[in-house]
Image: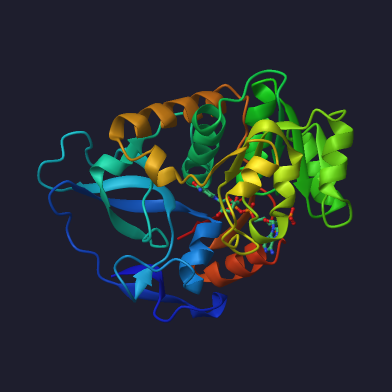
Length: 325
Ligand SMILES: NC(=O)c1ccc[n+]([C@@H]2O[C@H](COP(=O)([O-])OP(=O)(O)OC[C@H]3O[C@@H](n4cnc5c(N)ncnc54)[C@H](OP(=O)(O)O)[C@@H]3O)[C@@H](O)[C@H]2O)c1
């Protein structure tokens, strides 16, 4: 039996139940991993609350990101062996001391990347990789806006976008978060709970506005985020921490300057194994070189997952949060 955090009935953080379940031997193409650290992500809250239905129904083990060592490999697995250090984005199912993972979703960890670092960055760091390198190719001198710049995705994004030479503008919920975002490469931090962020973006960019806006907030920043874009700019709606964006008339994009809009997910960008490996190699390279540091700012015991969710949804966290079994 192994310790897990499961949801039997969707709802608030209180539905996260710490209990023991049996884990089977790995089947064909699977590996069994003893997990050393587990990442906490906003998507875990969407599944817990029922906003996203769990594909296998109830009950389900929460969590999408973790790292650990291979204990056993199933039939047909040749790429991994017992003792290998691995990490993956594979959910739900990660809030567990041990779990089965499809081998084709796991990547080997380089020696210079620790388990906790890996668990904190696989989902968030791979997301930043595709947002900056594929959804929109950010280049030196571009104005880019990232909402919730002091969050898990946000702090990794600010460092990486700065490293690429962009002019990084971020919104944040407090003065402390503004200082943290600035310390992580954000050139201009806007206190969007007190200031009109559209007016501030106009001011900061001298009226040129942004080539791209990355919006993981959703309901409360839409449609204002569109007003931060120059003509032909790209609106990237990649999450909804304040609630989903309501259906809107597509003519809005024409009226605001022939804008592009996309709603990407990591699942699509990393669906092919060759893409997953290339993206992970890029992430491990920027982290390994020191250009991007993974901010592991909150650590909880696995049994305290509910507290981690309350803090994340309560806007009390910065950077990445991890659970330790
Ligand atoms: N599409 C993808 O592939 C993908 C992958 C990973 C993550 N995501 C999305 O990226 C976003 C960030 O994820 P994360 O795990 O790194 O979370 P996070 O940014 O660490 O936490 C969410 C932050 O959103 C801000 N926020 C604004 N309004 C909020 C509200 N009403 N309730 C709660 N928070 C609010 C808060 O920052 P302030 O206090 O500074 O406002 C809060 O700290 C999420 O929307 C997530 O779904 C998408």
